[in-house]
Image 1: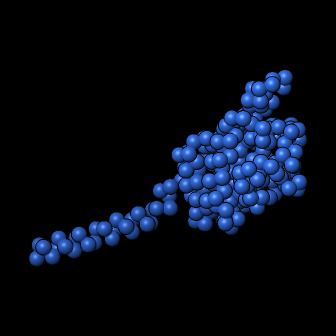
Image 2: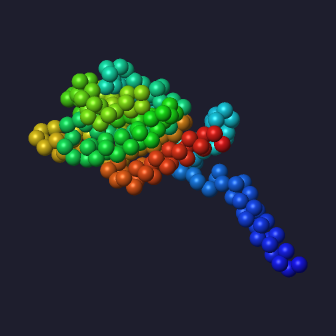
Image 3: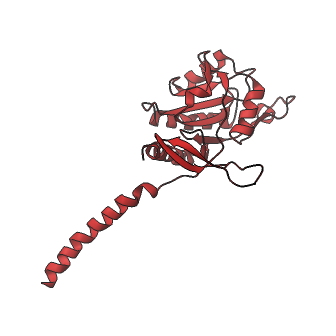
Amino acid sequence: MKKVGLLLLMLVVPVLVFLLLKGTGKNHFSIPRYYPLIDSTTGQVRIGTQTVAGREVTDTLFHTVPDFSLTNQEGKTVTGNYLKGKVFVADFFFTRCPGICKKMSSQMTRVQERFLNNPDVQIVSFSVDPENDTVPALQEYAGRYGIQTNKWQLLTGDKSQVYRLAKNGYYVTAKEDKPEATDLEERFVHTDKFVLVDQQGRIRGYYNGTNRKDVDRLITEIDILLREEKQ
């Protein structure tokens, strides 16, 4: 009799553990939301109502990345509306960059490949050297890395707009630090970070774009955001 009871216990416990994990699993993996909005009068975190996955949700309000209007590698105007409702990864680069841009673009091609057939994921790369990054220069760069325009936009345009986007939108560094420098790495300073943005335009993560393991983490967290929207 004891053997029968022990056998039943061995069968029932794994089932109960599975059901417990299944019931709580959707909250087991989560990634942060960056930069809560602060009420300038009270100094308190702002609370508001938003529509998430078709539901009205009252929650903390967070910084969202601003709109833009720039030109892509096909000479077409691209605005922030293109990214609304999508998960996207942003970075800052320039086509003449002799250093980290090569590593960053090589790693970003892995993101492109992983989500190539998923229209809910996009990539945008903002040029910090728009005067030289003309449409033909962007086209050549796109060809070099096998960039697919329907998935990955290389963007050029007004320099001041790009630098404002970096500083005030994505909270990263991108600027022309020493205009007189002949060394391009000294002249243009930009972050090596990939920035993950969710369907509501909120920043959800920063990743070292030259580090394969960190880009692996980015790919995993994109999958998490896609599932999060469906919950």
